[in-house]
Image (cartoon, rainbow, N blue to C red; front, side, top):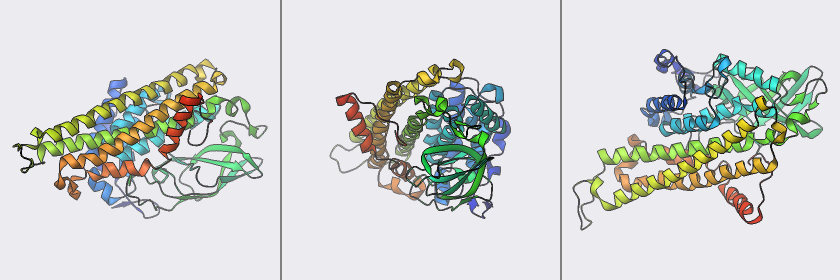
Length: 433
């Protein structure tokens, strides 16, 4: 049994070593990347239920993601990245989540955190961090849970220092770099994002993630004790003035990080639901028995009207959800391409444009939450009682969805959309909008 530095059980990266050479060449187009994601999902699906029960730190799973190159899908080609748009990355997250919701989730968080400087940093910081992350194939976690008190930041001449704790941080235990965010002591309106090395004495993980779902995401708590960074790493701050740079942090573009992480959520929700339907369908074809007391008895379960009808209904709703989710991904592409560093026009992004993107994402989140939970629970009705056996592993899809769809109440997305429709209001940027 492998273990990390705190002697906490972790999965062994060596089990996926063969894929380092097998997948050495990166895909070159959208279909190639999505096929790579499907290949990763197929590997993970083989023992997903067993790994879920074992609840080990996902070091092997992260190694597999690194071998696949999916960790670099958004990175610039000049540093060895895939140079794909967010819409392709979202679909890749979705594909991986079909086979293993936990791994799809930590891939999504990594991709978001790996691009933090591209949204809230200066062009120099974004380029420097992309070179660091992509050329080293680093995995990025984040200790940025807004429901907790902010980390406190003390300022010094050479840099700044974080202290505090977070109840939740996703993927940090198995990351190379960690995104930290906090508020300046005495100036709580001023916040700093920074990316720091994960392995250092001041970052202490509790290894206390033992929830019903997404068990392989290492989303437990972490203590941050005297973790320092130089002024050059204060994302979006002027290192000479030691103040936020309004040209970076005083514009709408800097708030795109929030609907984008919600878009990440939407895609692994959809992937988990699609994985539930695919897994249940295969189970039904192979194992489900026809009901012999219905008065219109069939020889096979796949001839039963209600089974065919229910599966058909689930497929239709998931296809509709997918079309909506894809549209939200294209909305992301539109903003990120139109207001890119290359065009040097980030400040032109309006609150209305940003807000309309957020409402496409909110719409997708409402639909994937409602549909995903209905499908992940409903498949048991058509797979049959034996599908509840632990070895079938069908329960993990509902547990994964139920766990993360409670991240922030979807009721507030419904209200937000109601205000958009009735009052023509776009949402103010918040940590969850």
